[in-house]
Length: 109
Image (cartoon, rainbow, N blue to C red; front, side, top):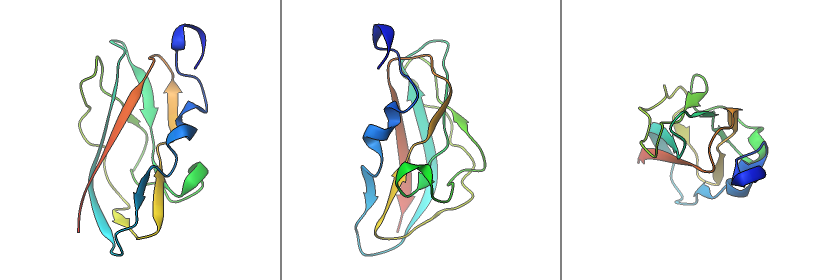
C-alpha cells in the first residue's frame, strides 16, 4: 500500500487465484460485485480467469466498486463458465481512492 495505506497499482496481485475452482465441475458465474471503504470511490475491478490478468474477462467491462463498504450492483457477466482448475484475478483499476476493496463472485453449479 502507499501513503496512508492507500491502494496502489498491483496491490490486487495478493489475491490472484485465491478465488479458485477446484470442485471438479464447471461453475456458472451469476454475479460479480465489489466494494470500497472510500466514500468517494472510483476504484474498479474487471476480473479475468487465470492468474496475472491474462485470461478471459468475466464481465462486459470494468465495474466501479460501491462506496463506504456498500457493495455495487453486479456487473454484466458475459463469460459465465468457470471451469475447474481455474482461478480468478480481480484486475483492480480506475483511480485508486480507498485503502481496501472486496469482490464477491456468485455462482451456481
